[in-house]
Length: 130
Image (cartoon, rainbow, N blue to C red; front, side):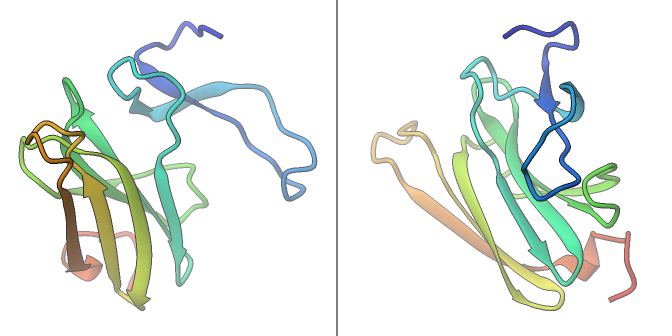
């Protein structure tokens, strides 16, 4: 389905644990470069949501974002790999202010390399006192 807010992603909200869903609306994130409907990494760590996705052309420039209002806003982000390729990411919390993000480079290196970073989110996620 196509929406007028392209190239931004579409988001849906549920207030009953997914039994019903609201109408589609524009998300604050751009689409994944035309790959269509790709799920993104999302993790809840101590009440802070973390999200990771490629933000540049041709699935480049992986970033991690944070939210403390249930995903309504995502005011802070940090670069994970500069202008390198990336996608198909996963996030896990490893402490109150630490996450690990894993992603692949989509075969752009010729080898389908996997990358990971463990980071202290308090250095960039200023949306909550940790």
